[in-house]
Structure formats: C-alpha cells, structure tokens
Image (cartoon, rainbow, N blue to C red; front, side, top):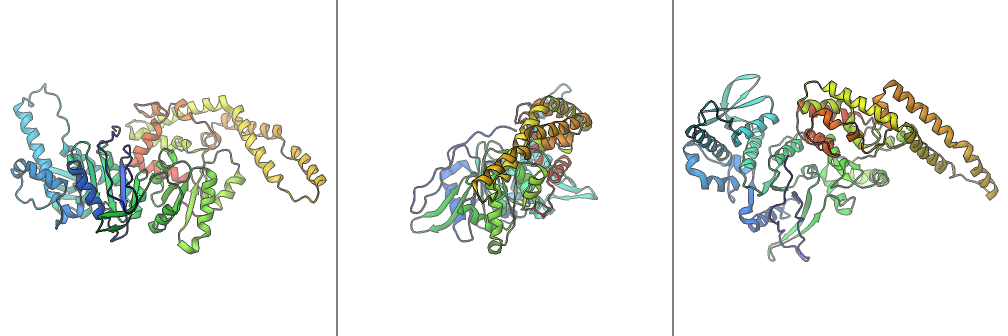
Length: 535
C-alpha cells in the first residue's frame, strides 16, 4: 500500500473562548464526535466549506434515500460529467445510482478507447483494472458469498447459493452502502479530504471496523474525516485524532470542543468517552501512535475499546482503579501486558485480576505463532504454508541455541529480583532480626541454582524442538528478522516492520487467513477470569 502523503492543511472551525487548535499536518484520520444537538454536523459542514474543492463529502443515507441538504461529492462529480453518464442510465435518482453511472461511464470510455487505439490486437498489453473492476473486486472480497456482474449498461448482483441475477439496486442497505463507499472513494479527487457523515449507518456492528479499515486502504493519498455519535466506531479508528464537540454558539458561530490526540492516555476526557462507549475497556502498553500493541489489539479484540497507557505498571493500575469503580460505571475493564520473564506465579496473579498475559514472551512473538505464520504465508499466495512454518521453525531453533545462556541469565536476574523484593518486605521487630533475614536471602535466592535450572530447561526446549515453549520465554527484539519470517512467507520487504505491517494489513480484512490468524492470537491469551472472551 502506498504511504500516505499529507494533503493541504485542514483548518478547524473557530473555538469558543479559546484559540483554535491546529490539526496536525501528518495526521490522516479525524473523528468528530458529540452528543445529539451538540453541533457536530454544523462543525463538519463548516470544515467542508472552509476546505472548498478539497472536501469530498459522502453520506450513505443521502446516497440511498436522498433528502434535503447540500450535495455530496458524488453529486458534484456527476454534474460535471453527466453527459457521459446519461448515455448509460435513465433511472438515476440518487448518489448510489450516480456512483454506479459514473463507474459504468468510465468503463465504456475505457473500452471504446481501447478498441479504437488498437487494443484488440493480439500483441496489445493487458488492460489495467478500471475503477469499476476494483470496486467489484473489493466488494466481493467483503461479501464473498455474492457476485457483481456487468451486463450491458447495468450492474447486476447474484448470490452464490441462489441462481439468478437481479439489479444492484435490490441489494440490502448495507450491501449498497458498501458498494457506494467503495466506488465513491475510488472516484474521489487525488489528495482529497473525504468527509463521511454517520459512517456506522447501515453497517453491521460486528464487521464495521474491518469494513472501514478496508475502505480506508483504497485511498492512501486522502485524509478521512468522520462525523459520528457512535463512540464504538470512534474507538475503532485507532490512531485517529478525535474532536469532541461539546456545544455550538450560533451567535458567535463558534464551537466548544477539544482535540484528543491518539496518545492522550488515561485522562478525564478519555475516561468520560469510555463511559459512553458501552464496550468493555482494554488497556494496553505502548503509546497510541507508534506501538504494535495499539495497532494489533483493536484488530484482535474488536469487542473492546482499546486504549494505550504506556508502561505495564500503568496498565495494571488502570485495570485495578477502573474495576474498583465498577458500581459507578457498570463496565468491565481488562488489560494486556507482555509476559516478558514473569514466572507462572506472577502470570496467574495478574490473570486473576483481569490482566491478560499471553503465552508468548512479548507482543512481537505473536507474529511467530504457528497459525499466524501459516496464515501470512497463505495470504501471500504461498502454495505450502507448512513449508514456510518449517523454515521459520528451523531458523528460530538455531537462533535460540545461540542465545540459551544469555536468556537464562536474563531470566535469572528477573527471578532473583522478584524473590528479593518479595522477601525483603518482612515484619521484623528489631534491626538484628531484619539483618539476619537479609543474610538468609542469599540461600533462598541462589542465583547460580536458579541459572542452572533455567539453562537446563532451556536446553531441553532446544533438544525437543519445542517451538511454542521457546516463544513463551524468548525475549529478542530482532527475532522476526533473524528468523527470516518475511522471506519465508513471501513478503517483498524484510525490514523490522515488514512482518508486523503485513499481519496488520491481513487482519484488517475478513479473509480466511485473517480469521485464522485472529483466532490464533486470541487463543494465546488464556484467561480464567473471563476477560477477553468474545462478546
């Protein structure tokens, strides 16, 4: 996918009683939220007016059912190209039909040009996919049980389990809305600011996040501004900046609002937003902009509102504090922290308190789970995913063998530190007793004894080829690269972000490999307390 290049600056409307903040030029997504009557629709309309021709407004409700209001981007585009489109259709009554007409008009123009330019010759190069081709391909990817057919100047639909084609206008509201959004996004001008009103409408809640992730992929050159009152949808946008519209002053034509950056953390504003989201909350490590945790876990746990808090200690404390107030807000909170070098006792302690700990040492190791490697290889078109996994396994065992002693030492340091911190907190009635207690710690936490035991266990893992057990204890940041996961799975890139980026892209879709990978990652979080289960 092409890298996003910022378009023209986006100006936010005037703010009541405070300077108007600047919208970060590198930010690609903005979500405008607010209660009914707070003025968020006027807020978005003012943004569109200030943007002028750079704004490309979309509304599935307007496109499917019309009604009063300013024309959207498709209406404007259609009026400027209506001559070509009118040759094809006589029943054009709204944005949905106009989108189809524009795509069909382009398709006919491309066919005619190819015919008269000698495109029918045997040695002519293959035609590039048109925007209609891409629209149909993406729509069928999202609705695999259906097909779209082009017959003459009409678009027809057909269900795989029910023979007989019918007009695309007879699709369900959700199917038509997705078809409209795909076509409209592909028709949007280059580097436009696409403004989507009520993106959650007509969308199924269970697949809404995945659908919009895929739709956003269609136009990496565009900014996207969403206006919604659905905080579940707002939370699904991950790294988006959020404008929280609180009220509108019609006399001053200004708004009371705050801009919440993705990495704003656990503050009063976010807390209030979470209360309104009606989903259980999942606190994770890292920042909200750059960490793998903040990008991966919303795709794996779509039934949660995911928020990044930085350190593992902040995650643990936030879960405790949030759940202590459960009688007030009637919501559950869970957390995720890396396993790192924690022993079984530490892991069970955290899990019993609603903090999920994976069966791998750190988040990067999730990308090396057997089913995830197989899924990535299949998604990349590898004919034998098991062969890719076998190659990764061989490289990982070789790497582990070279690091056993170093890993045993790191685990020993953690275990001894944990024992000392726990034991030193004793209730001694005199300094003499306390001194004798400290003297005994060396025999209790014998570093060499711990080291030898761990090194023996780690060598057994190497001897037995216990891939999953090694993933549980191996902390090594460059493991994905050194095990050549990208190469074995057929990726074109091999840098440190190649595998995470590819897996995240896969998980944003709804393909069979994506579903297999998502299930494997969820299964790596055994949870006796009930947190993290599917809603």
